[in-house]
Image (cartoon, rainbow, N blue to C red; front, top):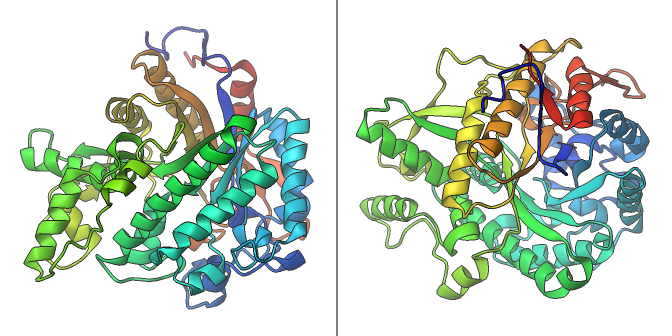
Length: 479
């Protein structure tokens, strides 16, 4: 079956989850309101120095902390079945620990969760979306083994507080992005850059923290609450630059190993890192005169603890790269270790942000790869989106075409490839603070006017069309 043929509606599976996603720092604002503690993005943006477009911050963002009802109107207008949001760790626990609990933070998230359920929308809650409490960072952050236990305690607190109503949990969003951009390149908070070292240590601790948080739920809450816990992994799809080149094909395999499988293999397969990762980093470390590999090792006990700690697969997909084997200096760095250069095909359309080439078919290939390598798990596409540059157009026809083509590929993955895709979440519900791009790019289904005090939300064309897909649980052929 070709889901683009014929003049009919092609249905998604019954009970397919239709959602949109946001993250606390990107939408809430209220950065110092009602007892919230500092987080690393508060610190990072307040330091200035052109780290973020026009030194913009998330201090106000979309104002969702006080304007939640406006967000809820957007969710209801779309007819979503699910809504993914993240909890601001430091809004609940200002110093990151249960030593001091901020009741006003609890009240806010109770309001969000209860109002979603009242409107028959399933809350999907991310515990950590890049915004570590500054107090925890000051104790070592993800570089410290101590943070594994601190995160487990935080997760336990959230399960206990909200788990009677929340049944889908995500522990950590995109550990790859945080490790690479926060600790290797230093362009995201906390802005550290000890190339080739910290990137692996913080990932190591995040994997263990996730596993501990999964076990905390499994051991203490699952029987009574009957929920599910996972982790959201980001990955491009990797195509060999020259499909006839053995070197390029091997480079594409390394690219996926150093992106997706860095986290997916330990959690979904066997508790340990990909063999090619271990070999490449170990060999290069020896050549660099180091006594041990820069990639930490899991003990056998840790491997057992990590293996199988996800009840479903959360995938954040945006684009694809063509991969070739580069010439590189043997210096300690993630890029040198990976030895795989990702390039955009000049024929691929570009969205409103330079890195996001439009490649919907890459998602289908990536979904098939996950099915084949991770034991055919249930998959939720927890982020997928298309950016407009600022100022955006309300008639965002290019974006809607992107969504149509992407959803067609998802349906093909389900019907033709047998991938168990359970849901799809657009990034993002509303225009928001897009990290180092600030407010210069727009991913939202709803436009936010950041120049007006009441921050009004107005639907783009893509929001109206997406709501039709949600309502009919299917795609209408365009022919």
